[in-house]
Image (cartoon, rainbow over all chains, first blue to last red; front, side):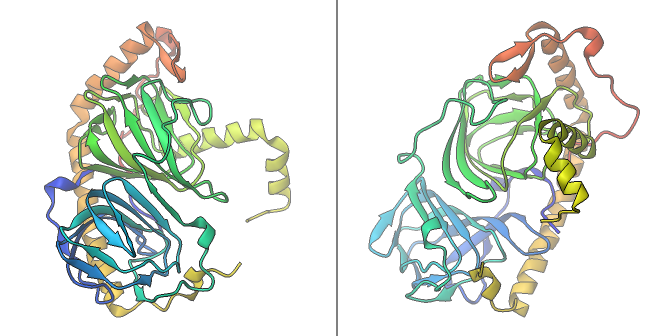
Length: 282
Length: 87
């Protein structure tokens, strides 16, 4: 089970729904950007109304939150536009209060939204994985490719959180106006992005404007790429991102995966052979 | 390694209903996206033609800003099968 290919989806055209799960306090609305049909893990855009209050508590899922607009006080500190949290499952966050309301992207990575009132973190909570930073201010833009082959100049990323085991990564990306890159790409990982501002177009899907979103499973062609006015987006991947570049728009995901395996075979033939011989299934 | 996630309580009926409701909406959204992307096919064909023209003149970005001009005989031909972009 997984998430379907949602691309493109412009959420600004849809109304918020009342967030009425009884373990959460009232006063929030949501839109589902995408949801895993097996686990209920989901990516949400949420609106927290003026006067929103939530007691200290934790979730049984890893969660991420990126503040789009407005401010919220969590514990003793006030966080605003561009603030990013990675909250490992079981980490208790302080009481929340938003005087004037705020909008955020909220991700539950392991299951549906859960909330348990608690002043203390769960004893198994992975405290060292907690991230709290202002995504706009507290990290550098990387103009160089993270791994070759890389994207053309005029496209830049900044990493906000990296899982050291899976290489899952949350990051901002931005493109300058008139950015263009003439190739088609696919990856071994699923990729997801929400356009905070601006436009970026791909030959397959047309223009992704402000409020545009995609969840794209692995091995699906995307590109060539162009941006008229530039863009900035929050993006996530669930594994290491390698750019398989090519220029055949008509290949399908199976053919792309075969090409990826052929490349792996050329790069690490002994590892693949060992895996095959030992029927390794980790 | 023991994980917090493994100690989560069983999913409640309310949570299951919430997931089902939202998955049903997502299924409709996906079907609409598929229709919209099929309707975009004529424009996509123009974009593909323009892409192929640029490959033969300005070049293909094989790594960052490095480009390689592609000869006409190496431009792929459209296969005789259904073409879709959303899966």
